[in-house]
Image 1 (cartoon, one colour):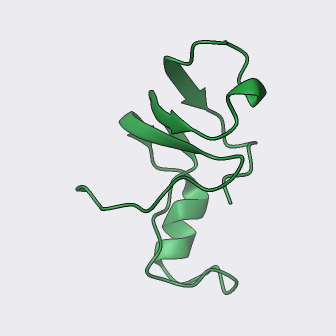
Image 2 (cartoon, helix red, strand yellow; image 1 turned 60 degrees about the horizontal axis):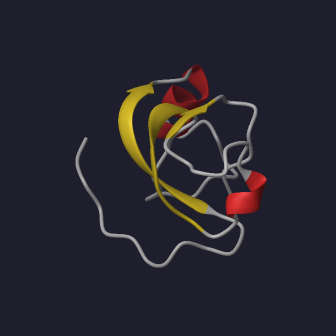
Length: 78
């Protein structure tokens, strides 16, 4: 666990300052090399709770003033 640098937020994307996260079984499989379509190094993360630090598509958010966010695994993060 640690910090990383990031470039600009992509179009229709968000940058989340993660406060709490969970380790999902698919992330364990990926770290074990059992996900052939995933190339490493890569920041894995399916489940997290955090604060939206930047957003290029605020209209996509339910709240007009984004503050806190919980990400379920059903969302597409790519």
